Length: 410
Image 1: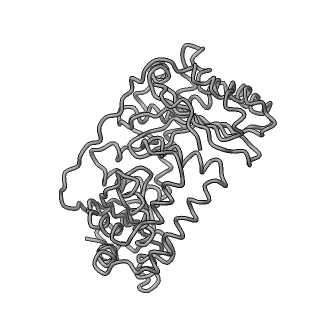
Image 2: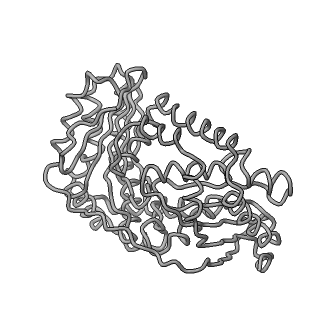
Image 3: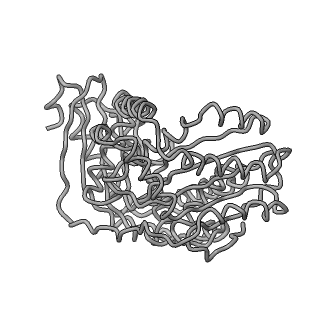
């Protein structure tokens, strides 16, 4: 892994060793602070840029031997990434690929405005997309517990935008937002391919002169209030219980400890939650704990009967306390380490996995190397994990259930 042009003020360029792959992967993203007032605009902008001159882009992509391209938004902690990706066979000239990526990024600026008709059409499509999230109860519960647990901070803002804010966006305002973003936001470009091509990808930096004006705010500090209980209803047969815990995770050492704790608690089929609550007691249809990328929160979600919500919540807390009080058996710790090491050692087998991992490291200002992170996993002791577990604080218990079961968990 190597980083090029480390000190460019607006666009940093990173080179990943992709010699062994049949394709070259080009990923550029604007690194944007996640704010409620811009989240929906950014999500809509991705859809509009993807559709603007769609036919020309599709034809150009086919000319590059069926290249795969996309424009999307990705949430990473308290950041919203407006991401442009292009994957081509290595038989495609890198200069041609970079030219196409530039067209994806900047081509729409030449028109001077977006078509009002096209923007309205994409607003309707995005509205339906956001609305349809409610049909996937697991995904909807995941979104709601994140919003409630991190309420008042950027971590709680949805990277996909909000239905209610689409109406006030018009074509002219969206175009001005796009122009300001291109002129002022920070960009990062990852190229996973042959090192011999690095000079050709450096030309992208010329498109982003000047200084970064879209500054990231300091993360808000949450007050340590007692846990909140929230219940919502929807048309569904089984209920979804979700619990959100605040945690520490600012350093690579703490992140490694949380990853291992999550694996032991509910991140695998041999975890405590799975074995004790699902297998032994049969109290849930599914149960899992998880961490969001670059976020100081740990979550648990389970499919249950609404009337079991109270007992389920108590059992989850009992499992957390069991790990804290009884410690971690050496055999379990080694199994968790081996699972984590396998996961991260396999990054080099996928260009997309490499870009995702190293992009997170770049966003956090960490050294861009898997070896350092793997060493943290290897040397982790039970005491290190328990230290982070003791800083977990339950913030929200959320139940999504059928309307006829409204009072099932009270």
